Amino acid sequence: MGKSQANYNTKTQVRALEVLISKLPSPSDPLPPPRARNPQRRAKQLKEDEAREIVAEYKAGATVYQLGQRFGINRQTVSKILKRYGIKMRMGGLTPDQVDEAVQLYEGGWSLARIGKRMGVNDNTVRSRLLERGVRMRPRRGGKHSKTAQT
Image (cartoon, rainbow, N blue to C red; front, side, top):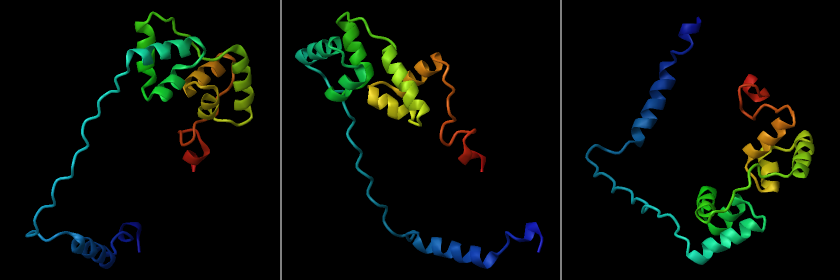
C-alpha cells in the first residue's frame, strides 16, 4: 500500500463520524438557554487614605508589584497613583547587590520568573539587568531554540 492509500481506511472514519453524529442533538430539540454572562467588572476604586498608604509604603521601599497585589490593583494603577502624588518612580527595581544575587541564581538554574518573584520585580526586569551584566540567556522553554522544540 502506498503513502496516499494509508489515509483511506474509510470503515474507521465512517464509524468515528457515526459516533459524532449520534452525539448531536435532534434538529427538532429546543435550543439550550443562553449562558449567563458575567457582569462587567468595574475597576476597584481606592479611597484617598488607601492612596496615601500606597505612597507611604512605596517610599518605605515596597515595589509597585507588591503594592498592586496587596491592594488588589494592577501595578500600572499603583504607578498612576504615585505619579498623581508627584512621587518619583524608582527605575530598574534591583540594587547592584540584588543583581549580583540574580546572576548567581540564574547561573544556578533558576528561571527569570522565579528570581523576579523572589526579588519582587518582573521577570523582564531581571532579564534586563542580567543582560546588562553580560549574562548569556538560556533558550526559553518551548521556544524555537529549546530542546523540546527541536524534537
